[in-house]
Length: 315
Image (cartoon, rainbow, N blue to C red; front, side, top):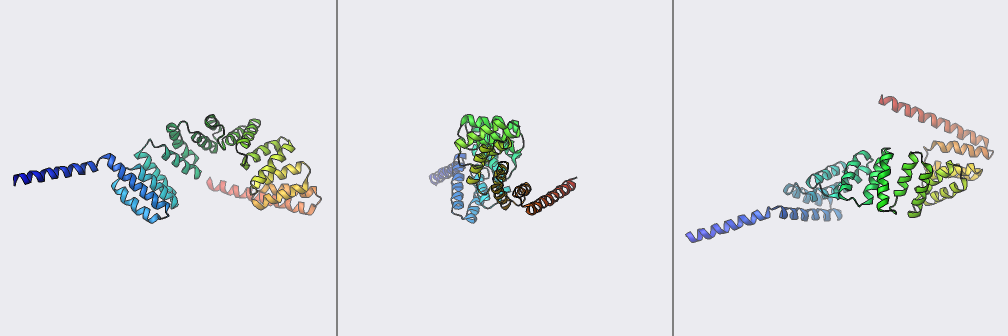
């Protein structure tokens, strides 16, 4: 009997030791990561309900798992629950403050929702963990740009280009920063560089053409703006600027066509109606021109009253 009790005691101790081993951090982390993998697979299959069930159960067992909170964020994104996604990413950061990917995803979420100020902090933390990633500096520069912090944007975008001179959109964003600072020739040079490294991007042609147009370098402006409309036919501003160029070149028929295209794409582009009136006037179609001038005045007045109402409601 004593021997049996000793053997039973030894077995109990062994069982307890085994249970303790299962509760060690390494095992818990592996189990949580396996559960996260299962959630991710279910999410990819489109089984969002199944993924949620697996996730809820796993989070009860491993509430401090960064991997689980990260897949929860993905599941929330697939379900369109962006506020919940943000909360899950923040929990993932709490669980693992050294995971660069989480900071990047949080920043991308904020940028996607135009919460540019909120994107700055996670981008700085991402850069601290990934100092050689040019994209991080570019995104930080873009966040500054969208908050009109152009002086802060310049060094970040330049760091991105120092790491990767061919990074798409980096020269474009640097050009935007230079434009807002009034450095048009420096901006034009950056837009030209963007065209060299990223020739399919219509925005660089549009902005380069607009600068050339504003300096009355009309052949250069027309060449850029024709490229802009060819690469993005649905961009109303490109058609508007090309129409302006044609009007300055005394090509009223071509200007009329481009102004009408701009208006068709963006009915709120008030300036296009004024330009169309000028083109029609140049063509000798005075009654049509008068109607467009009248329409321009009416739209401008409605816009003024609307803005005044908004301003008044905020006082």
